[in-house]
Length: 142
Image (cartoon, rainbow, N blue to C red; front, top):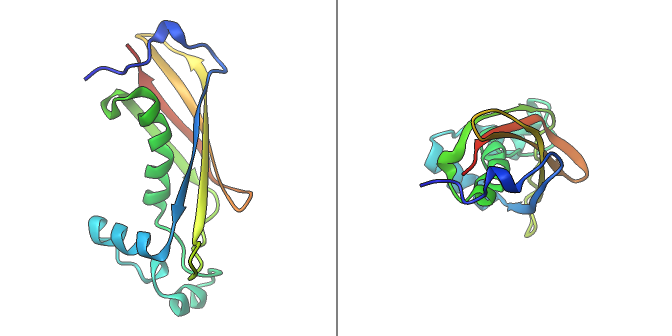
């Protein structure tokens, strides 16, 4: 499958459609089951607080994956992503209520590269705080 977005149709500054991703305690349980990461900081409030966290936090790789969905949804082809990396700057705290947390992600084409590739810079925030730093994807476009 090839990315649906044409390299010729983008320029530096092109904005990707933003997305919001709700995260509840149930989401964390599902992710733990799928990933095999059952670290108690992701489900046990008492343990999370004992190790200095404000509450249960989302898995870093879950947060990273949700941010990447902005890029894969935009390209229409997850295989178009040839590089992806982030730095974890703040944890996504997930309260034990009906709302949970909300990760808000936006992206912008930051550079046109060779071989029909572009670099996309992402911004991921939760409760007004940046949760991922240096979030960048390199994508090969059609």
